[in-house]
Image 1 (tube, rainbow, N blue to C red):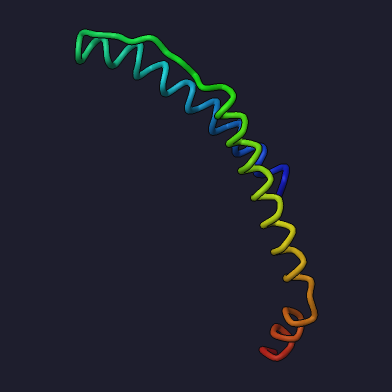
Image 2 (cartoon, rainbow, N blue to C red):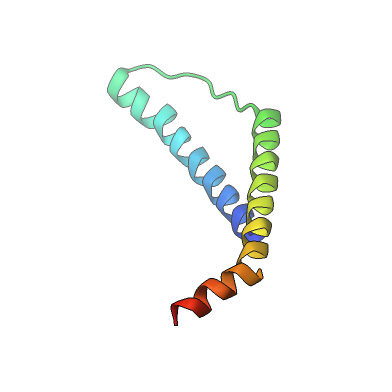
Length: 80
């Protein structure tokens, strides 16, 4: 869960960065004839990414523990 979440965050940040650059430097200039400066709140983004990574890891751990519990095995066994 940690690795998949980390990969998703990395890809999301990279693609978000690319889309924002295209929107700011291409679309705004061609469509609206104006531009703007880009300010990235790095500290807030890093804090948010760390929070998401921690929450995703806890969720994956909780889900894995529940899936490996006796209740889950018993529920599957009763279906057969």
